[in-house]
Length: 376
Image (cartoon, rainbow, N blue to C red; front, side):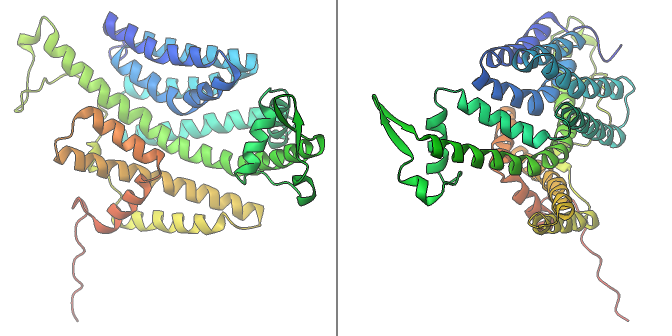
């Protein structure tokens, strides 16, 4: 394929593959660090593989996905690899398809988000099938079993209790620690009660986490799987054009940048991304409604609140990132910081507030001012 050669350059192919494969395979070597490997597979690997495809070619993209499958196989056997394949392969296939067909961004972006939703929902349904429809219960029991068989399990339970995360009845608190050679251990009654509290905590967390993950990761991941690959892919293509032996015949624009035949899908510049005024207020209303509905005791209302809040939160997070990018470019910030700073702000949940502020204040001047009403 023209836009997806096997590899674009040997160096780019090798570097792209190593940057993806080495962290995954190293982290999957032990059960504890394996949690980070799972995090990388879910949140970062789809975007990393798509970037590798645009920068390095189809081979490093494929090898990166295979590294993710191998990491999950090392952690959870054949079932782990199956879940990873169900999640990663449709996303990668959709990305290759929209790039190969050069589907405009306004259509390709919703398609990528939709594929993320279907892939994550498919993984959830498969897990429910494997656990007989009791995924949350099985997950809670798995955490309990892991702590019971871990040498530092008692210490972890005590730390969770000390931090107020786990509860323990008053009559067990006075005798929860028993002296042993060189230290203390939890009493059998206290440990059993803490494990039951942990099981209930995991159930409650997953009830809210999974719907939130499906919605927020689908939106952020779907957008990121196009935004980052197209941006970094264009930078790499531009650099190759200048370094190639035929650079003398390369056309340049008024800024001296190479004009390359690159599938940008007509994606607008990120610093200009914004919600129209009418849609912005609707998303804001969804955010407010979801915030209050999450506290509802009705299960259906609670799930609806989680879905509304997660979707609106993700949309405003993207707008906040666009605002940060706009401000950084206007100040001439180096490219590397234009990636690092928004990521850090997203981890601190700051971007969503910046997005709301931008929507209200129109600080970038992208929305036309309201026309005054005619006086009768």
